[in-house]
Length: 235
Ligand code: ADP
Ligand code: MG
Image (tube, rainbow, N blue to C red):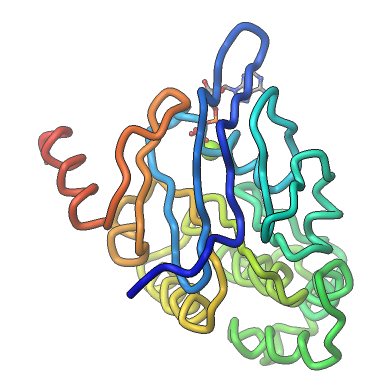
């Protein structure tokens, strides 16, 4: 199937931390109906790239575009309003707010205000039971990851950026997460997953980019790219 035009594009991104080059000319497309993954060892620059896309870091050079509009200079909250939603590697929910209230915050910060969005999103993430009325503080990691995802989705984003969404999840939770992400892509959303769990990526992504030392060194369907990685690593 032909790929629709990308919704989010990064071109020639460069980031330096002092004299250290963390991103050394990254090009990336995130397309509708697809799950795009970025994998690579710790320190490769995955989170730095993620920050440039989300708007929490300004690249030294290069551009980020959303639907053709240059958003390189826009702060994170403005990008959220325009339809770029994200989750955090370190969970970032409001501990004293209930599950429902956390999701409502996401709906208010998002692209469109849809009165049905909170309920729909709670249902999608299986958070519509009694747990919805509990404060986020004290909920298990697996539940908090779903709250975060619900918060990000409640604003009807065009693009969903996920930084290590499987961190801290057990096998069943990872499988449930994969099902939700695939359903979102099937609905036409654009997803970018930054992840070092190669097994998750293998079963999930449509296209994988391998990052090493601030560069993309291989790209393609997961079967091909991850097999090559596995042989290189002696798996
Ligand atoms: P990854 O997410 O792939 O593990 P990061 O983007 O977090 O990689 O980091 C890439 C490199 O940049 C690492 O060598 C890291 O130590 C360095 N780095 C990340 N953030 C900073 C920072 N704020 N200041 C200095 N160096 C940083
Ligand atoms: Mg990281």
